[in-house]
Image (cartoon, rainbow, N blue to C red; front, side, top):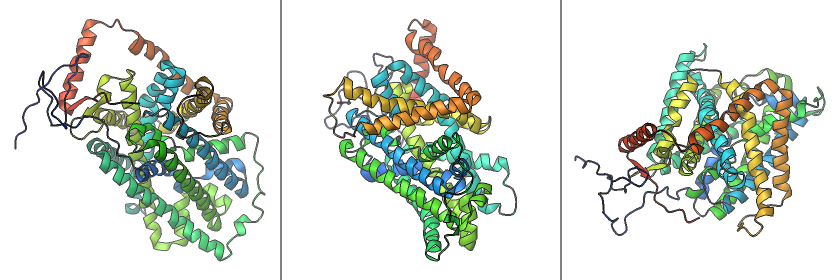
Amino acid sequence: MVRKPVVSTISKGGYLQGNVNGRLPSAGSKEPPGQEKVVLKKKITLLRGISIIIGTIIGAGIFISPKGVLQNTGSVGMSLIIWTVCGVLSLFGALSYAELGTSIKKSGGHYTYILEVFGPLPAFVRVWVELLIIRPAATAVISLAFGRYILEPFFIQCEIPELAIKLITAVGITTVMVLNSMSVSWSARIQILLTFCKLTAILIIIVPGVMQLIKGQTQHFKDAFSGRDASIMGLPLAFYYGMYAYAGWFYLNFVTEEVENPEKNIPLAICISMAIVTIGYVLTNVAYFTTISAEELLLSNAVAVTFSERLLGNFSLAVPIFVALSCFGSMNGGVFAVSRLFYVASREGHLPEILSMIHVRKHTPLPAVIVLHPLTMIMLFSGDLDSLLNFLSFARWLFIGLAVAGLIYLRYKHPDMHRPFKVPLFIPALFSFTCLFMVALSLYSDPFSTGIGFVITLTGVPAYYLFIIWDKKPKWFRRMSDRITRTLQIILEVVPEEDCHNL
């Protein structure tokens, strides 16, 4: 059956508008009674919300190399304390975001809260750095881990070719982008499945570890606090590594508008997820130390693989597959959530108009999803990704700290604001202080990398005035921009979201 050609009308802004019949309406047409609006639907249930949070927090780090905490604490006992405290601090941040998400019922996470509290300039700088550097680099890094570990069982006796890793990684990235472009429901269902795979992988480590404890394998816990003394700089850096491992608790707030009953489900999903992740992380580290000494852990490049080879025999070959699936889940959850950040920023006028448009039938923010693909591919095949992330890691914590500090500001500026979920004030105060302290520490401990990141971040300021504030752009530029937007609309079959935000 041949589809009818697209018939279009032009909106006031010069863009095509339409409905979900696979066509755009003719001029003067009225939407039929019961016609479904082109909007992002509320398809994120409590279980899907939990899977988004757990699925993006648990990546490759807990399985591969949790030695950053141990390196900077100097002892087994102190490292376990740091893992626990970082879990509690992350819970504090997540609870603060639960209040923000139930008070400001808009998607976009950090960007939206900074926009509401501090205004458009810092919000634009946040999304500018996220789109150009942070998200493509972060996606490329976790995707490379996926490529490496999915191939490891096939290259047991030899080194995996770098080109093979990058090609498989490119396939994985493309798969994630296609999945998120095609269906919100399928993306969420696969995320639930991958979350169960992650938890299964953690149980594969925890259960043998508990059995080792029952057998009396506690030699590595004797004198748990003895060893190399942690330096004054070491403990804060250990916190930094720990907090990085827990990063991801904020992603549900990126999709607030798609969450069913957000006033109930956002706080519940956050509390359940953080409890599961914190207990899982601490018990996983305990399990490692039942079999591996602190010295051996520091020498291992993949702690989970070393652990499984000693206890699980041939079954240890399954561990890299589970690590790869864990990475794939983080890729999927990250793309799903961050695409909504770009979608909201475009809706607010801070990114090109096309990024705020929705596919007429699939109801996905197709342009906001696929915009990451070419940028991620560029990062994948060029540059030192770890250095880029080091340059800009401080920016993440700076803006998260500012967003949570904004909660305190709103308490005093708007005391009568409707707050279905409210946390004690010491929780956001302690968390925002911790974030800003880590930023200050990075300036002190690594001024070169942090300075470069600071300069990259500041490029958002002239970009804001050039692209957003300057409204006397040449006519040829505006005509070309409108023509590109309309062409992309027809190719991608997307239209602006209908005005349905009764927030």
